[in-house]
Image (tube, rainbow, N blue to C red):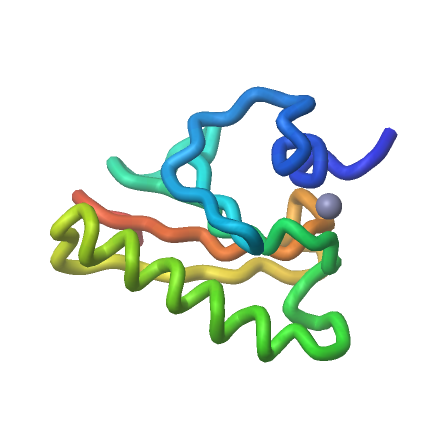
Length: 103
Ligand SMILES: [Zn+2]
């Protein structure tokens, strides 16, 4: 089976990529729940924010989110992590939602 998001990182599965650097990848959620709905992920496989040492990565995910905000001139946004049974793909990802109502 393998990890869906690792396959996206390796370009073995298509995704609409918004931003990429050495360590992180940002792509559009295929089931958007807001006008702008991106997933910000570390390229290295780490299961979730419940994993050991996830805090350092969270810090960097927020830095990536800020780059997107500045780059796209976004005013308000929401950052969400799902964990455990709330998390559909077991590869840590931060949802970036903006525009319209994302409640
Ligand atoms: Zn993975």
